[in-house]
Image (cartoon, rainbow over all chains, first blue to last red; front, side, top):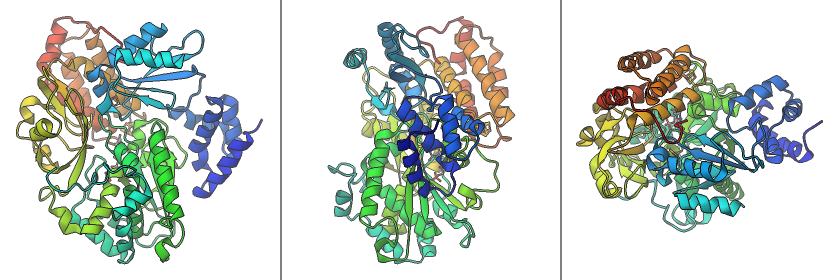
Amino acid sequence: MTLSKATATKLDELAARYPTRMALTLPGLYLVQDEAGWISPQAMIDLAEHLDLSPAYVRGVATFYTMFRKDQVGRYLIQVCTNLSCQLMGSDTVLACLERKLGVKPGETTADGKFTVVEVECLASCGTAPMMQINDTYYEDLTEAKVEQILASLG
Amino acid sequence: MDKEPILTKRMHLPGSHTLAVYESVGGYQSLRKALAMEPAAVIDEVKKSGLRGRGGAGFPTGLKWSFVPKESTKPKYLCCNADEGEPGTFKDRVILEKDPHSLIEGMLIASWAVGIRHGYIYVRGEFLDQIKILQGAIDEAYAKGYLGKGILGTAFDCDLTVHRGAGAYVCGEETALINSIEGKRGQPRLKPPFPAVVGLFGGPTVVNNVETLAAVPWILERGAAAYVAYGTEKSTGSKLFSVSGPVKNPGVYEIELGYPLMDFLNNECGGLRDGTILKAIIVGGSSVPILTAAECEGARLDYESLQQKGTMLGSGGMIVFPEGANMVRLLTRLAKFYAHESCGQCTPCREGSGFILRMLEQIYQGHGKLDDLDNILRVANNMTGNTICPLADAMQMPVVSWITKFRKEFEQYIISGQRGTGARHG
Ligand SMILES: Cc1cc2nc3c(=O)[nH]c(=O)nc-3n(C[C@H](O)[C@H](O)[C@H](O)COP(=O)(O)O)c2cc1C
Ligand code: SF4
Ligand code: FES
């Protein structure tokens, strides 16, 4: 297999902005992930080939960074910050509400594959704590009612 | 701030992130001025301003720029550090959202001063909205001829590229950041060589924080003397603080350095929420030593005063702790952060952070012994001094200061046989 045409084209455009092909590793991993929702072992091989790198090298880089998903997750990835400011302002309530509503603990995915809940580190939203990120979107100043409302809006 | 703001003065304007608004209040005039000056004179002006790095270490900015060799066979690079991962810190975020052109202009001036033709802005991976705004501003600047070839009709060429991080705190460390842009695992490099000599893609490299670079256009516009009129003799200028915890008005504030901490808390931040009593404050991000409520009295927000108080200005990420905050649980959570973010290259950091986390977890879960506390302190103090990067120090400082200053609370927790309940702490 090879990379999708769209990803290959975008990478070739980006190549002008870096003196090495290796520097395209992170942008490439993002392009693959944005397209497929995660980075499969095969996608790493394809990307490595495109960048003239070894598959082991690309895997080594991908596993270093937490934002590259090496496993499939639920359609909605719910990331709850539980670092200092969020914990001081009530991230316990947010987690408890999610656990109750979805029936999963942090690190787990609902049986229907819809929601995955994880705890994460500070997301630079401490002034609007507690907060969570669902896929690409930040939800801030959370209360129990707000979390329930957000979950309901996701259907 | 009593004086006219430096960094936040445009942020209230509608559309402050756009080029049109930025230009309408004098934007890019500093670049024009800089391009008419000798590069060495620009560095000199920044040196005279006393501007120090706002990313945490407080290193003098002009001096850093002057370390880059003038002649180099390899291209030189500028890296803007927008990784903003230090817990409690969210101040660079507002610059990216509300005033991205000041960062672009600051990067252009820095590049002109140091002889750089390409800059990378390393933005933390979660900042997708901010990346969109920043990229929009960069596109506008290209279209208007502030970026690209022959900038403002001169022979100066300069490109800027946004590089998205991918969720690793240690990538905020400057050499890890460089590795990450190069497409490698984000592990810090042994220094020397320093980035100023061998940095990104092997070329001489300047790494500066967003806020540092965003202050540069004002300094060029008004002159170093005007900047020195802000702040104290050694801590010149203004600084952003991001305030979180149970205060009435959390958020990002610009203050003149040297401002009294308690005045800041009570006046600007509106004081603590009703019914809440101050227990402690971390003034500069989770990695700096904590101050007890008593120590906060009389503290001033500048590099020297805070050093006298045994802590640091750091990133300006201020976290306010109320009476009743469970320090055992919070420190356990914080230890988990550092243990998770340790890149594992150095034994003292890798092993020490893991050991401290396990001990704290045992204590938190009700299986602690009193002498565990001294063991933790001993291990923490052995983590530092022999590592590739200061992440080990960044863990040692909170661990030692929290346990020392709140020792009674830790001891009582152990003696009472309390068990951590509620949601998992990590
Ligand atoms: C573990 C670790 C994380 C860091 N994270 C950041 C960060 O997120 N942003 C930042 O500007 N500096 C961070 N720094 C400091 C950088 O290494 C570097 O000193 C700074 O970017 C230099 O810019 P300045 O002189 O303008 O402050 C971090 C340092 C360490 C050791
Ligand atoms: S001190 Fe820790 S984070 Fe820094 S290089 Fe060593 S192991 Fe990695
Ligand atoms: S501590 Fe949760 S966003 Fe910073």
